[in-house]
Picture 1 (tube, rainbow, N blue to C red):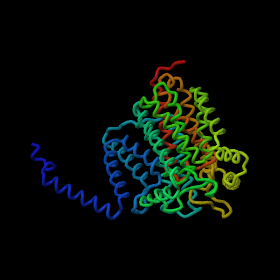
Picture 2 (picture 1 turned 60 degrees about the vertical axis):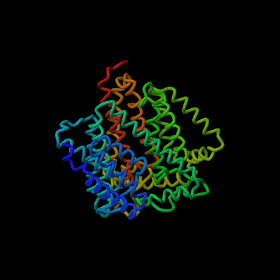
Picture 3 (picture 1 turned 180 degrees about the horizontal axis):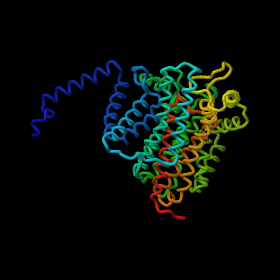
Picture 4 (picture 1 turned 135 degrees about the vertical axis):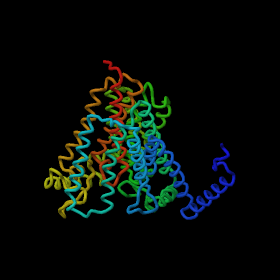
Length: 473
């Protein structure tokens, strides 16, 4: 019977190999070796992801951490990003599972209703604000990505139905985050000219070319900031704060993910070092607040780690510039903080005129006001008014209230406990970061939106799984 299969026919194999070689050669010749390698890896990953939904989710996490702003070198109405393709593939496989009968019941949580209300409010504000600016293909695309990122939380909740799946996905987030941090440190440590050349090589996948490196207050004399492949050091810092908060419980957990504590100790160290090099003060504040919450809730030894880390940063000569930046920020003495205060003032002027439903996403209706502020909560209020902001806060309050109600069940499972607390602390870190930055709700930063809502979905899944654990007092 095997002889009937054309696949093992030597002539067929030879022709197939020749066609493949010609195709790869043409790809290298026309697109260059870097793009050819990226394309081949992406094709292989896409084919694998189409056979397994979880592999597709891994791909989303990898793109967010390592190539968050990569795009295809071709335009199809708009230029799709790697994240667009990864998200589209995951939702396609998920919908096919419903159509094929492999899924027949949607898993819901108490947070689903307010999150749906938030989506409805966003759509309403989007439509109501179209008169304030042009409806461009780019705006439609970014808004669709925003909604898809929120819906991704629902997909995660529905997919994660076991502790094994929860642990694997959390582990992938941690590993990809640590890899991004290691890459960020590497690009920071090497000569700037080499780092600039390496990052500019990513222009084949839509990254900027030249002038890529970022500096404190855009002044090279004040020092470089680590950016990894995230372009923006504050957005990169926000990602590291989330991953660091997720990793923190693994340092002292009885049953760490994959059973390898040393792996997470090393990963956490790399993440914190890179976070310091970003000079993102709000991101560091987010991680510290999240770790304080973990220490108060369950892991007292994290207080010692925090105190030791603070002492080292304060005492070491090489970190004095970092300490000075924090002091200047607290005093409002540096340019970046002063600019933020100006943005807050302008945002409040907009909200005084359009308080209920905001002005939408297309633009501001008056020439003396504008959309955009370095505060996630004011940004939501600008676009969706205080009504939208209230719905957003209610949705997150429900996430934490539901977790609080089931905390004892989660604590009874030594494998679930660090994931349960780590995922919720990751959300806390993001919420603190949102006080001084807006990336988790900014339409231009789809990767930040997606990782935020993925953490929300995983946190809800962890709480739901805790219901199966015998409660202890």
